[in-house]
Length: 124
Image (cartoon, helix red, strand yellow):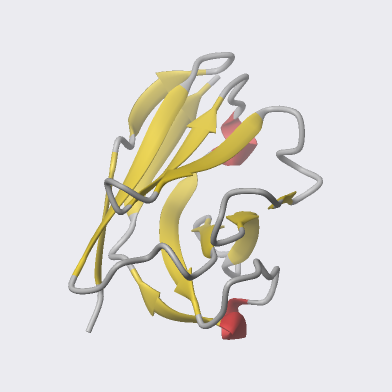
């Protein structure tokens, strides 16, 4: 079993920044890709970013490319999402997820463990 706990969400003004963290317990994540997804009210969950097991490859949704950065610290079993230049359209619950394999994927079916989510609210 893997437990994923997100933190770092909150309320921020447009143009501001937040850094989300996802801490894992129960199993080392060093051989698995990790991803971040988000779900806004009334919308389906969508892919945000993913990172390969080594951190050597990263993937981003077009909506966040150039503003968000995913990273990981395998020694700490933690994945991060640095979010800059936030806008109200980024408001959502953000979830981290562990992939079934070492390479990242945009498909949520490629992930087998999910955190409980952390709320990010961006005011205009």
